[in-house]
Length: 305
Image (cartoon, rainbow, N blue to C red; front, side, top):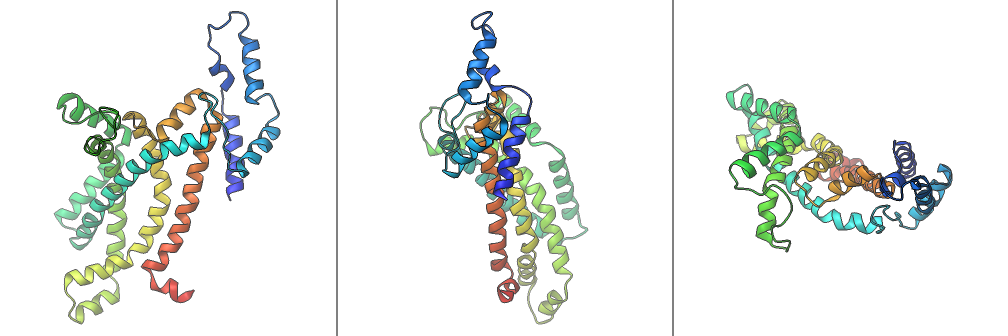
């Protein structure tokens, strides 16, 4: 699977329009000699070789753990991605945890109070939040809270450039809130649907008939509704990264997403491909974790094995 992904990424990046050598040579540099400078840049970057040869050289280095060097900064791509990984994990992880902390109780309450005002309100807010793109919410948040009210920062991780926890948390509020709203809106509907399915099962009626209270019956239903939720969560995390890419760019968050967007602008092939491989590995890991978590949330899987 990884080999297929690597081949697909390499080919798609090379098929994209544009020439990295063109972006590296200024338009006004050496009038009349720009074509030779572009040709020399292509030779230096190895882009003058046939694409199959480029792939063999790149994949050979990849097998050794070498993702190559950035065309624009000449730094190792692996180190560039590693330096940006921390801010991205912090932003995505915080938003994911906050979104689930909102979605789980709201989804449970909406299912327990089915066809009431609470259920209708939760469904309406979820649909509206899902319909509004993250980039629009990000710009709206900046306009309201940073420009008009001036209570929250609009960009970056720190004011002073130094690592200060309070300053970091202050800068996290807006981007995390934007991403967490999308997470909460998506998972509220999944949790509600799973809870409704479980609450209608015979074992819930049996538990209630044996004297279990509403809370205990609800927790039994919630545990059994986690199986589809784990699947959705595993598939959602990589897709969630695409939304984080846009939000990172808007809030100037120094993560992998912002780096990927900048690489796309200058057609930095090694960085684009390296970022794509990171996402691919994340997809594979999330699917593996989903299989492992099945044994935790569903005893029948452990019994079958």
